[in-house]
Length: 268
Image 1 (cartoon, helix red, strand yellow):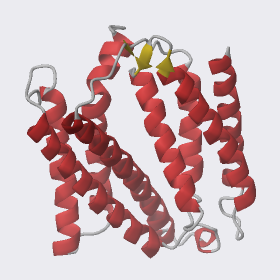
Image 2 (cartoon, rainbow, N blue to C red; image 1 turned 30 degrees about the vertical axis):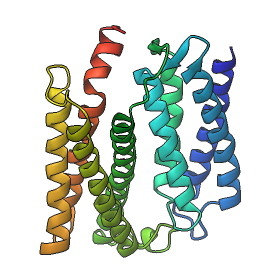
Image 3 (cartoon, one colour; image 1 turned 45 degrees about the vertical axis):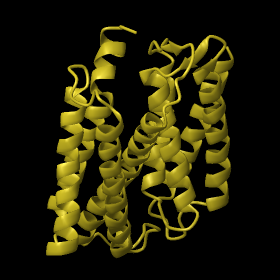
Image 4 (cartoon, one colour; image 1 turned 180 degrees about the horizontal axis):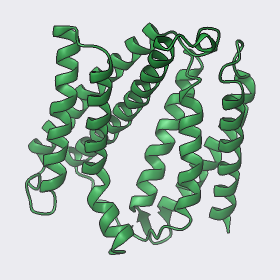
């Protein structure tokens, strides 16, 4: 009952925050930052409490697909909300809040019962997993910036005057932050893969070969975008599409097999 209540609270306030921001998306003054932060903070705290109670159980740690997805979602929400305190992120906030609200509701109907009685602390493995999580979060946020860049650029090319007088961030600022995030995320993914090869003997084992292959493919695409932008000056729609494709491939690498196994086949 506690988990359902926390889910309802987080869902409600994420939805209210998303609706508030969306309602003033093209307003010159934009949404009220104080109201947005208040609503989102309540949702974030409820989300965090839900995670603590879901992951840390009496029998051990529940690190199911659902809980890992909720954790990554929480990290992204906190990151984007924090960034919005300093830089305009009006277009990103309703996306991350809306997605978080939907994921929370869906999580109620997804089975998640993977309980580990104890965790074996291996410094190398912990380093690999931490870097992988961090790289994924940064690159997904970069992908959100890529979508934002595409949206603003398209509206400007269509000479939509509402975009000029809206509270949305300047296109050049979005582009600068986009490539900063992609560069940092790609470096983190590089270290994550390197640590995996250094500390794990199972990178090319049968059960992990698809994850390793897709992760390397995603890294190649991201690295190409970073190289092309900084060395050859590549910009625009082609880079945006490449970033979205790479993020999709990386998501399949991280969650594809677990989704099929835990959600579709209900094997734990």
